[in-house]
Image (cartoon, rainbow, N blue to C red):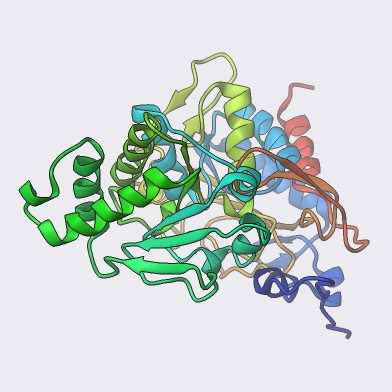
Length: 392
């Protein structure tokens, strides 16, 4: 059996290379399963529809899909009275809570590239999860200084980079920074040495033409990352009284931004929302967290979507809760006591066309299939399940 994988042409992105390595010619042999036994698609759809029909409080999670998949899953969720959360729900929720409480001055990849002469990176290493970040934001015709605050210098950053306060707690940094931004005297603060370094950075910011603040919600200290993001937003807003600055959150992996945007269009609320036709939408960033719902045994069925990679079922899923997996062809799962349906689905940009929001949530990127497979899309499966739920 051939196992050759796809290759990334004209790019050295290690993340893309790793993702493509999971796609081989063996994928064509993957078929639907019910409780680990090979079956056909109609039988798998019938069992999945039965699980959803019997459920009174289902959870649709993972949600690693594209915009079309999100739209179809929303309709299925509304027919099922389901809660919607994402694989990266914690990072999304932190950003959402901060936006709701404080608002934000956000920027984009294009704006940073065209305007920023100073980039301030807060407590993260962008190239670790976003290998082409500097390629996308640096303009080689203009010098852009990069300052890392609360972390070491990213090895992939340019030579115009330096780090300050690499071993200091991000909350301590942001508290002092907020005070300084509002005009407090560095000498009057408890940690004068730290404050003086931040004060010097503020002076550099005020001489810059445009400063971009970059952070990664997933790397900020949990469980209170939202408070750190609020502090960043407050600092950026205060700076905008006298000069120009914007913030860019590096998040939205596995279709998270795309699904969040789509659900917000359709309901008026972001993810971690329960939807049902005929009843008000319920949104709660804390209550509707996947792991908490599963550990508290508040869910009686799980629809798990992972079309971009072979993500396992949540470890917190009770063994007696039925599960439906719309997953990457390489997905594997252990035997369970409850009914478990697996349907291999197309990966957007590999097996099917599609659309995703870029990391800055400002541009919709079209995806073109790289190979010809017979896998159904998440949208197609969700639509079939919707038809099964409608009265005949």
